[in-house]
Length: 309
Image 1 (tube, rainbow, N blue to C red):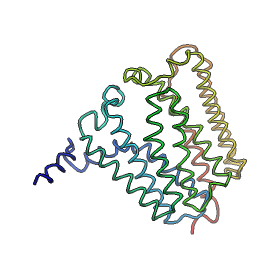
Image 2 (tube, rainbow, N blue to C red; image 1 turned 180 degrees about the vertical axis):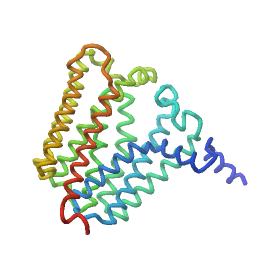
Image 3 (cartoon, rainbow, N blue to C red; image 1 turned 120 degrees about the vertical axis):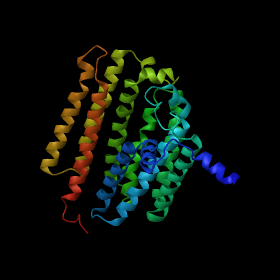
Image 4 (cartoon, rainbow, N blue to C red; image 1 turned 45 degrees about the horizontal axis):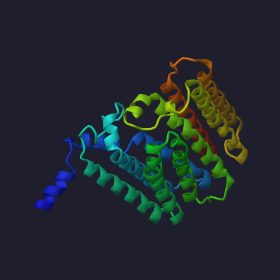
């Protein structure tokens, strides 16, 4: 009886139905972010393997579980900080809807499930890449986030791992320059992605005692830096066709349009000298550009005669 009561206490929450539990788990695992990582892993797999196989679905399941588990563990680790910020206080743990012990148990279960699937459903290299991603995000990045406003730069490495992981599972090797071009794009894109989010909620982060870019740079300097990172993310997409991907004429035209659109979007940081830049809009458009690049990469694969097994 005491054991049963302890288990019940650990998994205590305000969810009273399966629907509420589902919503709670999706919020805990940051489903939208996890789906983006899963999609980039699937892209890497298809670029390496070509044909669509059941193994890809094993990979995507593993990456989704791993990403959800890592995000859930991050929410457990930052539960005290999250209570201090307006943006995060409604998350499952700080809002009191989920017991911290339950969140920790769920996160570890998801991470372990994802790693086991990678080990037995893919290969050891994929397993160690997945393990490295979790250790980097929940260990190195989390530590640096408490210490420096520049944590997003090394933290962006996490964005480069899913496509590389998919590439490995699809039969590619890390010595192939093509996957480095794709992974580099996601790495560079992730930095302004993180920083735009931080700038939009700078007061929240400062209230929680976290380092802020606004404390390091003057507003004019920040604008120039943000524009350069957005410019770099846009231009890095142009390196992908040099390695043989996105090489059809329609795809190249769409990629060029996406690049110019993203640069124009970033030029708002240079055109205005007030604090009225719609950071949320810039953030959304930058994410749309990354999604466009992924779709063009997938179009390359899908349009190939060897796509269907």
